[in-house]
Length: 375
Image (tube, rainbow, N blue to C red):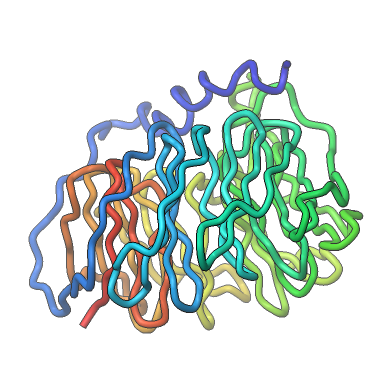
C-alpha cells in the first residue's frame, strides 16, 4: 500500500534525524546542578523488553498494568507492586496498555485487539481491526476505540468486541509512523491525522463532529511536506490543542472546532495541560511552557537538546520528562529550572511518565517498570 511505503524512511530521516542539519548534532551533555527535591522509589518490577514499539503502563484505582513486545501482560498491586497476574497473548504486542471500566486492552501488529478482565487477567474477547495497532486502545462509556496504522479509527463494543463503527478519511501517500492514539472527553474522540488535520468524532456513532487544520504541509519535496500530528491532542472543557511534526501548534474551541490561536512550533513528542499552562517538548528536545489561552511563552529549557526528550508530565509544581539514556528530569513548573534527576536502568524512556495520584509510573525500553514519587 502507498500508505506504508515511506514509513521506515521517514522514521530514520525525519523523526530521528530532524536536527542533523544543525551545527550541534550531538545530544546535549547533562550539566550538574544542586538538587532541591528527591525521588522516592516505591517499587520496581521487570516486565520485559518493548522491542521496536512504544508501550506504556496503565493504571486503575487499585492496579497497574504493563506489557512487553513479546506478548506478555502483567498486573500489579498499585501500592506494593506485588504481581497479581500474568498472561501471554501468544502474539507480539505493539499497542498498549489501555485500562478502564474493568478491562485491560492491548493490540498487535496483525490487527488483533485483546480485552482481559482487570481483576483476574481472564480473556474477555479478541477482535480484529483493519491494520496494525500502534497505540493503546482506549475505552469509555461502553466503547473501545482503536487507532490503526492505516489511519482508521474503530469503535468496538466493550462487552463483546463487535464492530460498532469505522471512521476513515483520505491519507497522503507518505506519512510518519505514529504511536499516538486518541483522546476522549465528554463523549467526543479527538484524534490527529496526517497532513495536520485534527478531527472530533462522536464516541457512540463514529460520525465527524468537526475537522480543522492544525498545520498546512509546506516545502518543495514530499518529505518536507510531511506535517503529521504524531502525538495526542490535549483537551479541557473549553479548548483542544494539537501539534504537528514539521508544522504548527494550534488550539481550537472544543465544541465547534473554531481556531483560537496557533504558533509555528514543531513536535513529534506531544503536549500536556495544567491550569494556565500548556507544556510541550519540541522536535529538538527543548522543553517549554506557554500560556494556554494565547500561546505566549513563559519559559524554555534547551539543556536537553537532541536527547530524544519525551513529552512532559505536569503535576503539582513539577514537570517531569525523560530521555534516551533513561534519565528522569524534574523541572520547576514556573520557570523550567532543574530540581532533580534520577537514573533508571540506562535504556531509553520512549513516552511521557504516567501520572498516579501523588507520583508517576515509568517504563523503560529494556522493561523496568518504576513507581516513583517526588518529595
